[in-house]
Amino acid sequence: MPLAFFEGLERVKTGQPATIAGFKACRKTAYCSISISFMSSTPSIDAGTGMTRTEIRASTSLASIFALRMLGLFLILPVFSVHAKSLPGGNNATLVGLAMGIYGLTQSFGQIPFGIASDKYGRKRVIIIGLVLFALGSFIAAAADDIVWVIIGRAVQGAGAISAAVTAFIADSTREEHRTKAMAMVGGSIGLTFAGSLVAAPLLYQAIGMGGIFALTGSLSVLAILVVIYLVPAAPPLPPGRVTIREVLANGELMRLNYGVFALHLTQMAMFVVVPSALIQSGHLPLAEHWKIYLPVVLLSFVLMLPPIFIAEKHGKSKQVFIAAIVLLLFVQIGMGVLFAQAQASWIWLLALLLAFFIAFNILEASQPSLVSRIAPPAGKGAALGVYNTLQALGLFCGGALGGWLTQHFGGASVFILGAGLTVVWLIIAANMQNLPRRSRVQAALV
Image (cartoon, rainbow, N blue to C red; front, side, top):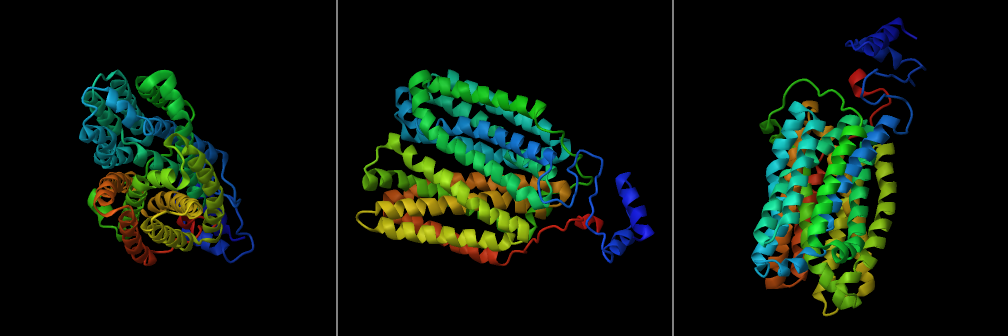
């Protein structure tokens, strides 16, 4: 093996910049299957295909933070509109809708500042501040005696916009070839939390009431703070340099993904404005029993989305799998549009399309943050993911508003016409995106 290679390897181990010549020389020999450790808090780069213990610990602990926080939100959704009628001002549908939606609105305002702050001051610090705000808002809502104070509490909850910082933390702590798996852990935890909340929310509401549920969400946020402090591994050092928000917005590849997450979540929220009613009418299933549909569908979709994710990671087919998921989403929107245009929707087809939707949604939800973190400049991951999560929150807000308006004026099928149109545009935009191949065993920075 060339002497230059050993010199370069020694410089890397001691934290010094290595000459490229030594590593290029190695590529001409039969000894290129190497393992290099940087002797730092970042994951080691090795020739193995599995995640390191540090990567697994970081991914699972940060996914649990997402899950604890999202559980606090999802527990409220199935029961709040009913509970609101018992509050002064709760008969005003506009105020009830504002109480539900203002969380997403303040989230959209906070994602970019929190993301930029995490680039500058560190991920853990910003995540803890966001969780404190979320806990404070939860306890305000728990103590509320009218709808206005619930709205204030929900607004403070949303101000703790930590999604960008947590996602950037995961990106910092994992190698590129395993990043989508880590993001899939987050997506899976959110899906399981959503399904579980549909079962638990009515039971908890009967046991501890709405105030108790809000207090529970605050307690879960405090628990998440302890997870950040004691379980999440130390954050890798932030890369040097500074990236402005203008540079992030000028990146065409990032803007493709930003449009994608906006379209995906607008479509999701608009779709679920009309799907619950269809389950009641077509399946004669009361609202309280909808979890019997959502729970198995979400669980099965999570299992079925794993093989495409592994194929994308192992064979460098991230773009192909990504495009295939968008095509599947388009078929779901077209199928749902045809279904809802009929007088009586087919129960079996509705279930099949729901399963297909969640498979596509889970793949895209796992892939997109991973792609953002790979495309974004190292010093601007937080800012890039802040913009990404802002568009996600705006998509949820617009989806609810447009879905309700379209259903009221043009019927349920119009929701899926909108979804199909947005997905076609997304497919055209995504078709021209760069393909990011699987990273080589010796990282590109060294070769």
